[in-house]
Amino acid sequence: KAGVTQTPRYLIKTRGQQVTLSCSPISGHRSVSWYQQTPGQGLQFLFEYFSETQRNKGNFPGRFSGRQFSNSRSEMNVSTLELGDSALYLCASRRFSGDSSSYEQYFGPGTRLTVT
Amino acid sequence: AQSVTQLDSHVSVSEGTPVLLRCNYSSSYSPSLFWYVQHPNKGLQLLLKYTSAATLVKGINGFEAEFKKSETSFHLTKPSAHMSDAAEYFCVVSEGGSNYKLTFGKGTLLTVNP
Image (cartoon, rainbow over all chains, first blue to last red):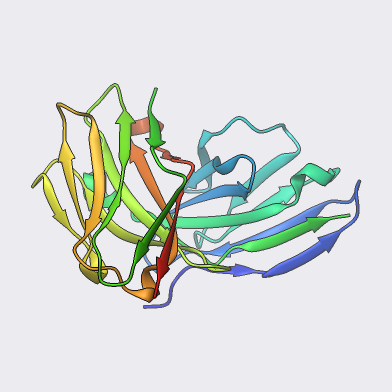
């Protein structure tokens, strides 16, 4: 079974621009979550999507948004990029069966975003 | 609110010696707990998980963790370190339910010396 895939793997953008990152979950996984990883703040939860609806959101400004499509693929968008947005953005998918076996998440390799 | 504290930011061991990575958690509910490993320039890989079944959990690559509710701990161990174990390890807690999300510790960098 193929794992979580993320595209692109690397991005360089300029301050003020916007960026869209893409994530394809493991087949059969209906939930997609996004995380930001930086050396200073570590891994921080951005948001989770299930059935095309945002279920939960972390403490990030409104410049960070996402969406999920009917095939469970997800995109994350960051508008008006700032230098501090430079990070590794990780996507994770999980089943959504309602029991504890669905709590574990499987992560993609990440997209390394550099803002200059 | 849930939180995780990894007690050591860096652990250094010699190849063939035991590994102990310490983790304490805080949770208002019965938590699910995980250990993930991240090798350089790679994503996160699930090592093992605790979800209220057996308190001693076995994972991949010879790693184990023991859930101790009285101590709110979930330490990760391995009897004999291998060079390939060198990586960053994250202890993670989830309370599940409708407000599901993972909360990560700051990570412990494991160095394995030859």
